[in-house]
Length: 234
Image (cartoon, rainbow, N blue to C red; front, top):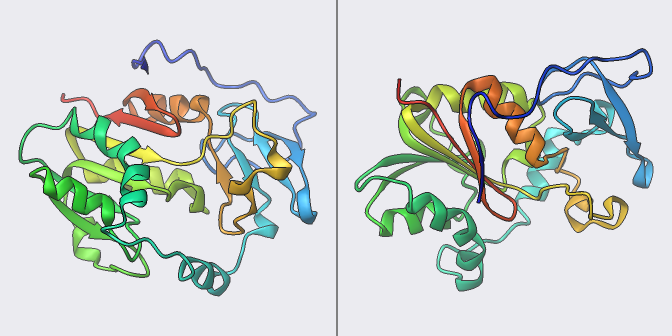
């Protein structure tokens, strides 16, 4: 397990040279990115600061295209294989939660299996999804934990999304994110995760360290493709 605190994240504000001509980073808002790749005529950039890789804004899918793609996903609540997949996030999060915590499954999709797993462990879990559980009332509350499983890669404006998630977290709350990390060993052009046209931003450990530093969160990586971040109690 790896973790970073508020003062030992090993990141600082990047110095952006004239060679960094790409769009600003939608994750950390740094004004500087480098060309990364252009598979299937879609251009991707990499941030010089947080190392997020993101699709050029001009190539992002339209809302109706996104919705059609989302409705192709079939994830049953009681599917054992799907539950094993979600356990990578659920198990380390459950190990850190006090009994009877109240949480939010943000972007839960049509089959909120993660919420079911957490409820079975004795926690209360509200649901939010802009297509399938669009209840704005749950976004006006605060929680002991917030989960984002296979959601962050869809954010067109991730900086705003993580600001919102921070507002949903009580002091001491946990934020659990599971998404495909774009590690150095990944063949980006052949990567199955990139081929989903609704996946517009890809993260690395460095990306989450920068996000944690920006919000004052503690950050750790307890499993592959999982980041856990905690808001300070005080």
